[in-house]
Image (tube, rainbow, N blue to C red):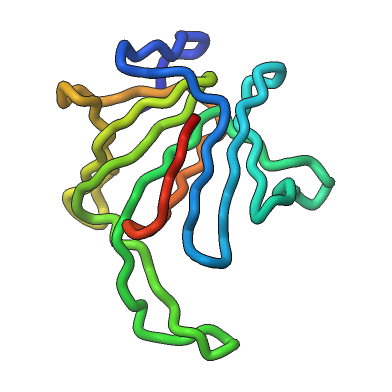
Length: 147
């Protein structure tokens, strides 16, 4: 689903975007901010830059925010909290963030081994720039705000 190297991301229905807030639940909110200088989306979690071991902030060429239902995984974590898992077979809505733009799309995945397909409002498959991709799976009850 990637564009050719150097090909510009310019879907007709894409609109400008510089910030996205993704609420996963009462304890986790992710913020993505477009950094035009680096051509990347920078991630923060709960108000703090989300960093890696060397101290750099997580940064992505493309971010896919795919809203999904969740179900019980059938076990508990080490703190005895129930563990849920995303249901990624099916269909739903998503937002693709790339090159300072947002594109509202639909997603579908027919089986556990099938590749997820992202389509625009006309039903055509969507391609996005080559580079690091972050796939976020907020629950259906969460919220996604892009500005």
